[in-house]
Image (cartoon, rainbow, N blue to C red; front, side, top):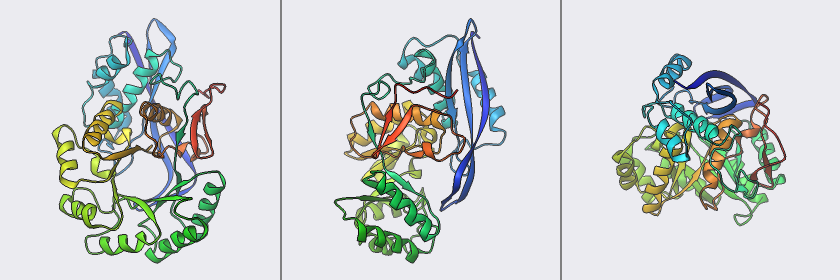
Length: 355
């Protein structure tokens, strides 16, 4: 095999205890995939596989060993001659390993473009296009959440995403009331993410209570797989629904069947969980055929994965704020030319990577 590869674990340390409805995160492990041509080892493509525990379908034991074995079986005979060929080569990995596919796609695309972290050559990586993003508010004590909100608004964000579903519900309503007393709906858009925390007996009541605070949308209000309940929530709930976890693990015709059954207003796209760049493109096509809007969100990747997702996002003219502000989460993230300014993510062509 003329292409060589290496898998390296990367343990990322959060700057704070990141609360979600599934628990609190203090560390996140990703795996960097390096690929190079045997005769030209100075040009290296890098991708990231970052499965999320208890969520990714390839959150398997001995991930590093399985990743090594899986890539070894792939058809990596030569440097791809085009972006399309790189994606086709990565498609040799099983669909049951979505984060590995994303890492292989990214590494091969990077290698194709000369190992410069250019994944998809477009105006973003040329520094000519910025991407609007939302400011993410993590769960925690009320004061902690209030501090985050004030900071994000001061930094210029006009779209705020707030995690809900893990705290006392009245406390979460208090946070939203505080935000709406300070900022009108026309000034700040509020998105919510429940991560499937609500139940069949309380979801409608809770959406009604939340809607009083001018909510744009809520991600995954109930757990995935409950198509009849989710369809009812989408049709009758007081807030428009964005599907997130509902997309995980679906391939082929099952994707279209799910969208047709539930008919959401939005879908959330996380390439690490969905199978990478090609799979995400296919989801976008299905959504747009059904007039379903979408936005991209990172899945706690390091700047390697975030860079690839940003370049994929920039390939589309989507004015909706994207969920790509996670590069600031870690003490030990890889230094990157990604910059956030006034609620926009941009690529600084004068900066260098820290690898």
